[in-house]
Picture 1 (cartoon, rainbow, N blue to C red):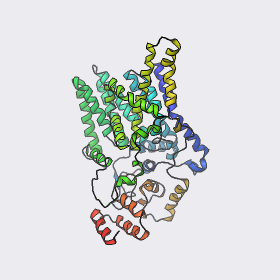
Picture 2: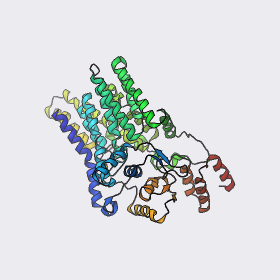
Picture 3: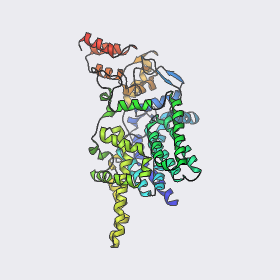
Picture 4: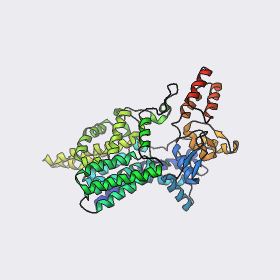
Length: 484
């Protein structure tokens, strides 16, 4: 137990290192990253979660998605609820809470990660995998200081649910199986409240059911948990669970739900869909190609050696396959822990060759010094050295957005590219046409198209976008009449 506690503490501390460097650079460059005595949010979605944390109101939010009539909320996202509650209890600004808490949230995943592998019987894989994931660029580009976003706790929930399901499987002959399945259900509900992507834990429960096929008590406990989740989340969402998953699959694979051959493809207008070939992505995970290829070689061995445990991490393996097929930078965050454990297990197997060596010095090196040396060499040090804060929005732009409140009437409608939609509402409390939550609408490609045209044509397009009855058929009509 003492050894496990030390490993957990050290892994958590190491995972904080890039954030400590980032915090140092925030204070070192206050002239760039501070405004009115506090840092300002540096990711688009953070302004959405921050505004709901600050002034959530149940019902229709008419400051978003003009001219369709706003977006409705039945309850605030969990991240907004947490930050809003803490802000009201402490009197601390949302920005400062995000500044200090987001690094902690982003590092919490190492705890269930290490515990999961400890229960599987390989603490080294848990420790090395957690450290390599936490220090990789693939993870740190999605989790950073003042990142008020759901990416901070996504891996925490995935590994926590996997840990509870693993404990349920290992305690299948006692009543504890019901306790751990109930905890997995609870964390799945929290995960949905946090991220609203049920496909993650659905895959985990399906993996659990495959493990439980030969144990009636275990199978019925898992099936009851999955059905309970389906009912509860369908009630929370307001429609049967599964429809949103199908819609996201269509969008992700470029299958248009509403098709028009004369409109730019929505996904091609969004920067985060930039593709990086998977075999060229090694620098996002490791220091060089060597640990990357070690991970790829030994990952299948690890998967079959710990097959039962890996079934509970099924969503991560599915996303690894998607990262190979699609090369999406967004998905690489979830590939990082899989590749990290593949490398860690490869190093572990190589170190076991010391059992066959007779020379004492060679035996000591291979079995004792080789694993930590390989870990040090594999760490993605580029993501740590002189790590600067993310730079989504500059201080000058923030000051301009604040002035919008003074320069425009209360009923003004602000048209901009979707990246700035949340920030505009956060600072000016003015209505916007679209933002990060409505980017997959007809308006996004039309605004992109309009911004590339000369002023007269762009103005006509913007008038069309302002029409709540505008649709693809109207676009065809206007396009032909203007001879665009």
